[in-house]
Length: 138
Ligand code: CMP
Image (cartoon, rainbow, N blue to C red; front, side):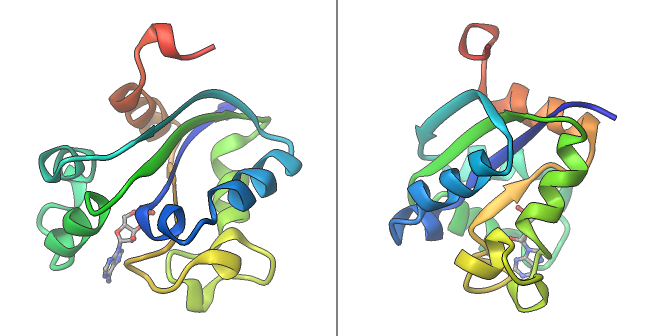
């Protein structure tokens, strides 16, 4: 069990003005921010981040969407961070997300689902390293 996870607030949510409300929900849930940046991915960078999905039929759509506008990337800390954060964000498809979860509150579809959350401690480390140098995390 690790105490850190990685998240992105995706372009659908940043463009709809949900960034503040999503961060508010995350912080009220007890997470502290260890690194954060507002940035925009190129299609190449989005493809590298989601390389594990390269053979999936939705890969092109995912890469185009994730490079379509700004995102917020962050490393978050809390006990049992990876598992608890996935509960907080809800199911990948917002139609299946529980009441009160971030995706239920803010996401429109399985593709444009407002937030990303790491699915394992190992991926939390890899994904945090993708965005942040040692000088950018505390
Ligand atoms: P995320 O948790 O960021 O991890 C991979 C992403 O792929 C996922 O959220 C969805 O946004 C996206 N994804 C998963 N399944 C589909 C699908 N069937 N169609 C479009 N996008 C998908």
